[in-house]
Length: 281
Image 1 (cartoon, rainbow, N blue to C red):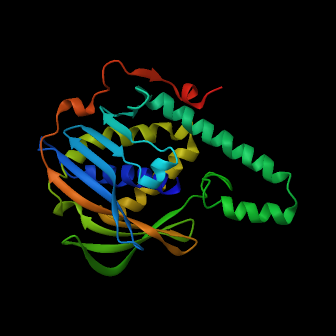
Image 2: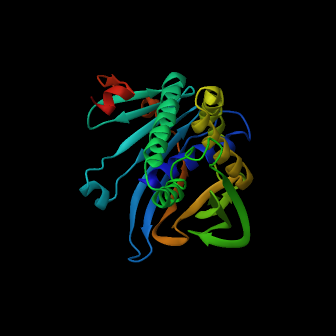
């Protein structure tokens, strides 16, 4: 779960920053990312990305282990500055527009306040231990500005699937959280598509800062770090408590091709749901 959330935030931030490079109509881009097990040297498809003009579709593919736990393939579509979460299995979708994102931000703030209330009832020693653990995972627990993201160029280079890349360490709240091997956007074909897809969506996050400072501050810090990196990670390695985890995400395919417009539409007959509908009673 942590890796999925982190990947979505990082992907949105880096592609948004990569968007501000140029304008124009270009061929689309199809991208595949795989989850590679360092212990077994086996790889499984993890994500598919389709970008064309001002639209994008991002499909999360569960690994066999996640699928066994009930995880299903899910799609996020960005079109005209609005994000759609599409559930093909249930044939429904949620529109994550400005109003919905404001609600999400407010719910995040409410959840943080509930956690704070629960912590206040614990013995001092136990409360301190829980605060230290949760502060790494819950933005806003110790204040809206406690979520910091720092990108550091290690000065090292590597090659991933024939692509030369620069190694960056990403620290969140002062701890090493990721190590990225980054290829400059200028070296990637079809990079121009990212501008039309993400520029307007980035503005939405700027507009919600007044009503959802926790969410806006979180994304702002991610944007700043990815702006410094200024490229696409062809390899991403996660760390837990300073130790490298066994799974890494690797770019397997980046290909220019025409993406059909239907890829960015909600299929006919799908029912629109609200966040409250999905949360249940």
